Amino acid sequence: MRLRVWALLLALGLAAAPLPPGTTTSAAAPAAPDIDVVRANEQTRAFLKAQMTERRIPALQVAVVVEGRVVMSEAYGVANIEQQIAATRQTLFPINSATKSFTGVAIMQLVEAGQVDLEAPISRYLDGLPESWRAIRVRQLLAHTSGLPNIVDENGLVGGGSEAEAWAKVQTLPMDAAPGSGFAYNQTNYVLLARIIQKASGQPFDQFFAERQFKPASMTRARFGDGYDIVPGRVSVYIRQRAGRLDGVYHWIDDIPPSTRAGAGLYTTADELAQWIIALEDGRLLAKKASLERLWRADTLNDGKPNIWAMGWPILGGTSRRAVGGIGGGRSAFFVYPDDDVAVIVMTNMVGANPQNMIDTIASYYITPARR
Image 1 (cartoon, helix red, strand yellow):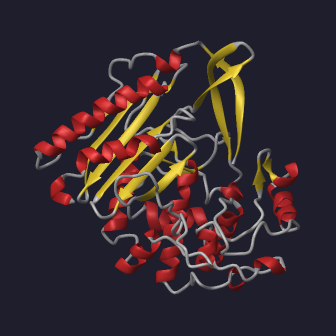
Image 2 (image 1 turned 120 degrees about the horizontal axis):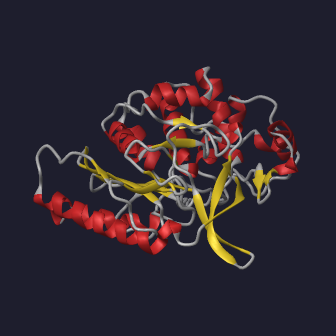
């Protein structure tokens, strides 16, 4: 997505300021306390507070799910530096590209309902596509192997105009590669998936998400938007960047046009993501175990090799155990460890905090030898 950095310079060092009193909020202790979980929570708390200081992160939420229950949920720091507003467990954070995992679930729900076939050409569901696009399979959109030209570039929407102009422009561009020949991260894929969801369900994708995922997972605060929309209760997002001779903290504004939000536009909380993961694993979102397995299984390229993405979910490398999840905007991430019944969510409001690099350490505190 095109991201605009606005020139509101804040005082040096504010993002690294000590946590104000009262800016840590915690979930209640587990109903049946486990000494290993208590110790793991203490390790997580200490690790994250050290990371916040080192990476100059103003605010952070964390939630940990073990064996289908939330064993830790806390918030630290300030959601808004200027006003010194404390982050709480109810503060909304953008998850950016991790929204794609929700789109994967939505498509699998339509597969279960017999309304979408992963192997079908996208022309079965969408009319008026360029000839070179018509044979692309639905699963290739989810797995970023479509070979399509990208509707966004380093300057934003291609063509520099409106959403309609960008959609018209991208359809005139040549294919980047043959479908299924390789992985290339691409926002056009998720613009098309949003249209498939609407065509198959008869609802806009955001309404379908709200009814079929947010409601059963009790995600009452989740909503779509970007940095220009009015979103009550959300964090302010920041970036550290040099400007002339001053090294300071600036506001960061996400520019995510509505047609692209199935790939990047969701605001929610770590608590809600934890409840969503629990609902996904206990059958409230997908009725069939085989559907969940397909959701998280690496797709296959034309040469038979496994792709690095599953159905809207990246297959996470560099982890100690098998993991899938979502990563967004260099500031929010969640990992699910299917073989260990553990999930970890970390959300921040600092671009470049890269919490995906923290999560495997946190997970190691909860993946005990008994569960290996």
